[in-house]
Image 1: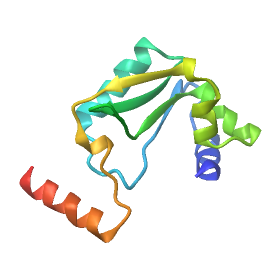
Image 2: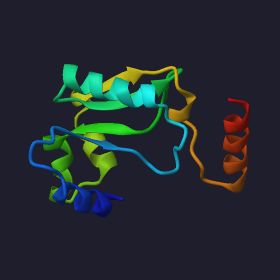
Image 3: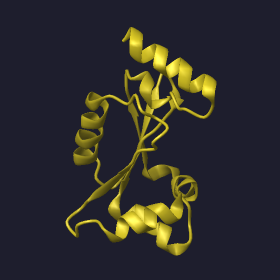
Image 4: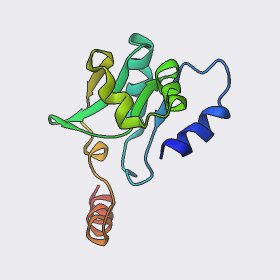
Length: 118
């Protein structure tokens, strides 16, 4: 994943202040949650923003551009997050989609049911 991030960072516009890393196996994250990330980044532009749903860490994660650039020092995203807890800001959300991922066929079926029932 770190190499994919490095490739993406090379394509960013120079005015970018943050990078939202949204994993493809978390398809149910709401637009409202994404808007909350943007607002939180405006308020705390130097913080890594991690969503919390009922106390559980989720995805996506928003990194300030100078912080995510640490992947060019050979670090992966987990290393960057764990490097300094003082630069993390948790964003409480009412969006189960941040903790629902698809790793197995059963996960996929569970998420399909959630999509069907709303």
